[in-house]
Image 1: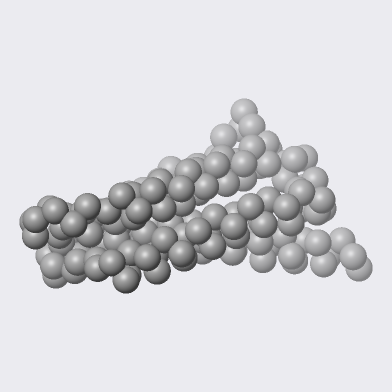
Image 2: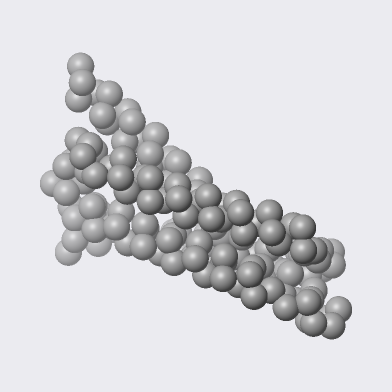
Length: 145
């Protein structure tokens, strides 16, 4: 993962965490269940993306090109790292949402803020993968012509 994305992810998490704590946004059981469902579907989306990329020209091209952010690896390795990190974040979010402790009000506010921050990072990963998927679509279409 390149430095720019790490900074964006960290800033996004901290801003959302602080904003949701400042505005006292608390998750209830219904929202938590909806988020678990959403991130479970997201996990399926990641697995589907891997299956889609498996036999495309985009994957062959990323294997042939060197990653400009890390010249010791190919672009396919960077893509693999993004998939791995995204899948771990999705699984971690699902588990934390399931284990969500109601606790006292101060605990619940911090836990809610933390989970909202993690959820926002997951949504950023979804956006990054949609962008990658669309780039792969364009690459695949250009090879068909």
